Length: 368
Image (cartoon, rainbow, N blue to C red; front, top):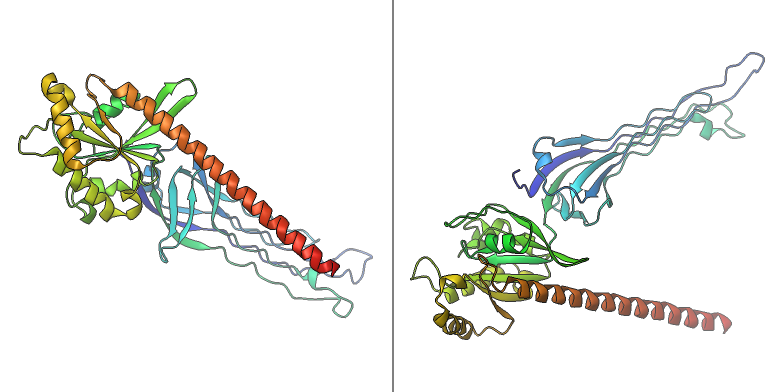
């Protein structure tokens, strides 16, 4: 199935039903009075997160969605039926914008999360609501209001813990095949990967993380060259980047150090946030380098890069060094999650302390 990460759709909420002008007409009951009921509310449009969806491809076939209108009120004080809401299921990580104003309406991040994108119209009021001691036979009613209509621009950023980054043919797809059950296409030519691939890495029982493989990045990607720039946004939500480097390129004139520097520059040009993300260096394809030259080659790359972060030496093809790397990634993610949880707890305690202190000050002021 083709990976689609952008879509534009037209949505329309339902209109509210009009109020009714009616009077009670029964035998032996003269001057029965007004009994026109209110209309029903129009249905609203919601986006609903669905963990089972991976792309926005469904919206290439259906681009218009509409909720039901509310029914008008009726006599005998009968209220019109409200219109049914419209629920549109989208994959997790979908960013929703108004196509005209470019305003971000919201982000769908959780399964069954409901995001209101178009409010249904309010019901009209029947004449029974207008009766009073001075107006016993009102003929006023109000029409229902119109439902919201807008054009939505949806953009999907895949949700992954770890992102694979590197030049075309650096071995990213081979690595994700070696570390997970994902089976992306692998071939001996650049740009084999044409869309992102997700894989779940199971380190041990109840310990796993999601890894994302995106198309290779080339020089000028931030300005639109190649395929990688279309998918760099998917890496912005990852907690860790693995920079895959081919230490045995097919072309002897290619310098792995220059390739790393080019991608580092492209990341910073694409966004400051992405350029500052934690990044580990993974020297891949060591199986193509003689054993007596591996140490010298890897040390030369690290020294010329002046790399300060973690460095790993692997061969994704025969899975050499892959398991220790995955274990370290799991430990890093667990530690990151623990620190984030502690930070949230500290913020909650500070907020509670501020509320309590303000309450004390307010109490003292009242006593005085």
